[in-house]
Image 1 (cartoon, one colour):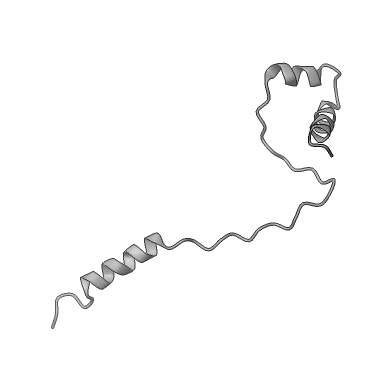
Image 2 (cartoon, rainbow, N blue to C red; image 1 turned 135 degrees about the horizontal axis):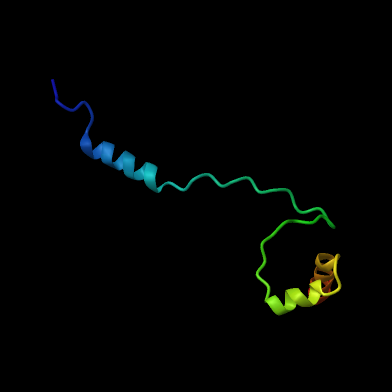
Length: 73
């Protein structure tokens, strides 16, 4: 009786294949709903942030509107 029941080369090839096969792609989310807000992380110069925050509450809406205008929307 053989000491090893499987062929070492076949076992090595199977292990290599398992390690190099691309994982299945994640399902993509449905397209964004117009007007829906999404939480993101954005790095902004401190001077720019201070300028938007000078007028108090609503600074995020003002910043979003400025970005919307800059994007031509």
